[in-house]
Image (cartoon, rainbow, N blue to C red; front, side, top):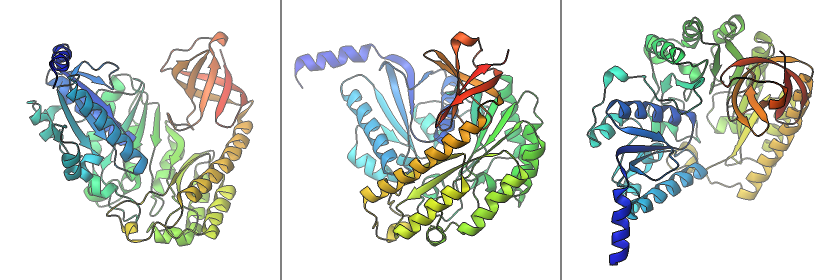
Length: 447
């Protein structure tokens, strides 16, 4: 190393804040939740903690990675490389990696990116803290430093997954399904409400499996009743429900409790019975359509979000057309679609990834174009109606919020001009919808 670059690196190192940690989160809301738990533990151990800090002045960087599909893995690797390079330049002293990618590919990562000081799996928070010479404080279990706006929070009710879906590597990274006891979740939710949280989004790999391990029955409905009883908890939102074996008593609770949002995120993955069977989803397209009809009958006005996969091995043009027709008939309120990612050690990996990348994208684009038209038509129906809106942020000339039918970052938003009145972020207001486009609603405050 040349003398001047060595000197420069040492000068940069001297500016680092001792015991300051920058936590970088990649991937899904479950990773966000895990990072928030980690940050609370670090703060309790007298570390100064930032989430995705703008400045490289932290002594330590912890990257919470995603290993779900190719794009997510590449983003995680790129982020690790960025901070490994920052460490070499003296901008960071220690780099640690945790999360799904680290769980799944630890040996490969240790070999390929040795600049990282240590790698940790998804359930190794105590070991990570010990490496930092910090104590794992059991009394803080459930305590978090929110990285979301202070009025809403992701709320993980279980870890891992026992489903046999052929395409999914989550069980490899997160382990088997483990529910958190109802009493613990109620205490956590009360703590969040005491800090000003008004909306919680229930997350797990599979909400509908909740309780089978602890109570020998599906207990999501019981949990919802207990959470719904918490004073000050205005909205409870359900994400990631599995269609096969869906517990119908959940619909009864949703219908009778006003603070459970008329919203359900149910990833269906495909609309062809042949492909659903190949995916080992435990359900047919016909049974799926019956389930959707039942859900809509029991909870009128419910917004149904789903996720699909295009280009699964063996997906023919006819299979895709069956999915396209299914989407056209079903008219989901919200929909996202992934192109199939061929993941090592999954059941589907034994099959040939035989749908060309260009065709996968073409099919995904066709579904999204169809959904765009459906979304536009459904949004036009909302013009002239009033909705209770929770305001999240400001952007340009607008206050931006959501109705009960929309989750943050993935769904529609309600935009109200600042010139038309004032709302406080984190508060609810009544809004009259005056116009709509494909994915946004525009309205005026009802004063």
